[in-house]
Image 1 (cartoon, rainbow, N blue to C red):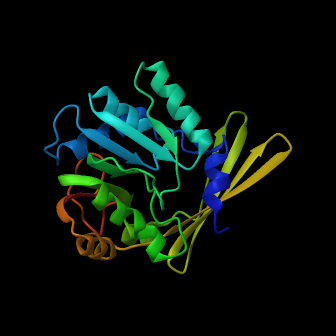
Image 2: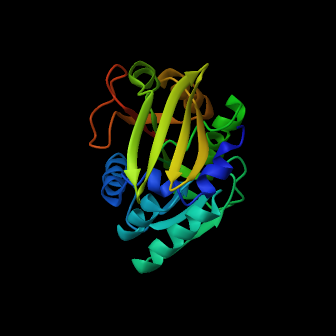
Length: 244
């Protein structure tokens, strides 16, 4: 299960499971992040682990110069087609987040929708934060949208089920050591397909310690996409905006 993300994010079923994560939600998060920055129209933005490009394409709509990358060619194909349908630039490429082959400098780098904590070691998980610092212009911003470890541990839903395209999806969740593990069973007709997710759980203090050690300063910390101030006891998300 070590590289679960390769199979899962390459599956066309991934977008079915997360179909409730829509363009309106992406727009809300993009505007929230921008409200904490001083970047100007046309500024260069990097969307790390961009998936199907929801956030990249919204930043493009707002007039920014956006580049997005992801490991999944399946999701990148969706991102490119979505950009073309909206007559937006489609600046996407395939890359592992642990080793991004870019020499460009950006004014804003975003890492959204819990595309963080997938790897086995802390060094791998935090490696992109170090890369992001180097890829940012002085005064540039880094935004991380992650889960709130404390409320997730306390409110984990062990199992949920939903119908989709005539079939059903059953998701089973558990905490295993310092990771949240999810088993996704997709039933369609007589066929059953299984996938897994495994995300390392980091506390707010863990993340602050690592980002500050790189040189970032915290600008804002939100607990949801509407901009509520982060509260470790009740917030579902940890949305942090840092500045170089």
